[in-house]
Length: 324
Image (cartoon, rainbow, N blue to C red):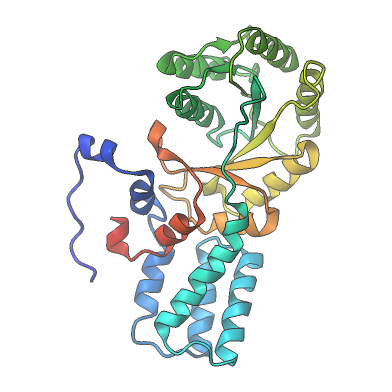
């Protein structure tokens, strides 16, 4: 079953791949959950030692203590009741348990027709991929024939403003920006006012990357929310936290702090390719129970996809040759 890896696909083949195909290729590179289970389960009998090994693999894959305990508790219960006759049944029970954790978080972002502009406030720590995610979302919405505007609310870094402008030019999307050091709330206010005047469908506001432990900077995000609500009491309509999947369990601490301060409505989990362990998505879902809008598995615009629980679990548990 575990034969030679196929050769690299051409650029044109990569472009024609679906997001699910890219997900299966890129998720969990390195010491992966799928590889561990594929080598652990065949030919084994279901006993305490096997269950303990599965628990260890889950923890090493960044599934987290809470989610791992929930999964293992159900497996132990089914084993005790003799509901699992063989290894395949055990594997399917594990898959079902993962889906039970993830399905409540499978809530794609819906942009209602009656709100214009629909405002998305993107937040997150430095290096989470926030500005890049905004650019990818702009491309996605533009491809859906929606009009989009971007607000360069990360005024602390001139490079962030320039990066957003590049995404705007690339996607033919206007960017509202001021000089570096300007008041972020004023930038977002002006952008919302402009988007409303131009009847833009979607406004996406960038914000300065910050540590979730920096109280003063979190207060600044609250100010952005307060100021824009002077124009629309329901804005921002989506407060989207971008999390780097490679940060593991620290992503949960970030989500908890941002949620407490801002009242998050959705999550984007990026960088699930490379060194990230895909199990962290289960950990976040179990703890936060917030909608996971999108996941990212690479730098290209098409590497950001709508989160689908079944596709994600299939990719996470696929045999190694399916991830090649």
